[in-house]
Length: 268
Image 1 (cartoon, rainbow, N blue to C red):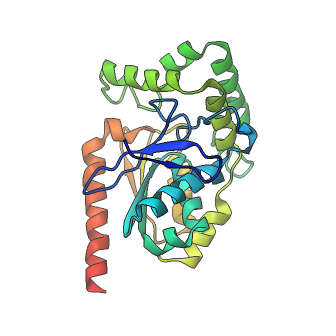
Image 2: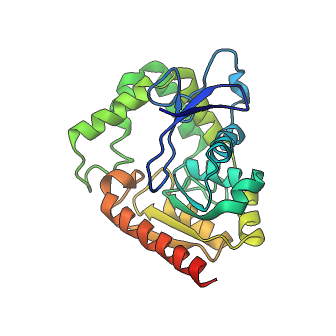
């Protein structure tokens, strides 16, 4: 499996290249499930308090510049939307070659409840999540994916649930907790405003109507308000992990969106 070295702390990060479309997954050399990119941190030599969204974004920039990928479209789920947005903000290379964004059930824009948007998950709930992970990690993950998968409205094979549980259990414990802390403390309002005013890059938002953690009205709908050109598609009876429960619909919408960008490029 190909790999590259992080410019932040020298961590060995592995990636997968699916040709002809390049979809990147970063892997830590110490863990099959990417302790680094899936919110775990590589190596005890690194001060974990310094790992944040900017570091995740820098990892993406390092990868794209290393493989010299040109004319790409970000496809980012949940908090990965923030990583791709920061990569775009921070890198001339990314801004030059990025042709669009596709956000599925984005966690943008507010991570925690505010007086203006009280329906977002309150900070107290995230603190309870951290406490539950500390007390009984295995039991917590055994029950935590039913909501994001929308079980009740959607049929999800038992083996799929077990796969998610194994992935979560294999991740570094401290890094999982740090990941929650990172996610719950970053407001992307300014970055979204800059993207809306400073570029014309196309944006597609795919969101589930039953996403409790990132309700559509304070996530995709708010992004649309800030960036009017963004297109929003809301899926019925869908929660947070659309790629499992609505994979064919997502694929169809992504192909259609990419085709529209390609057609626009050919005309210009």
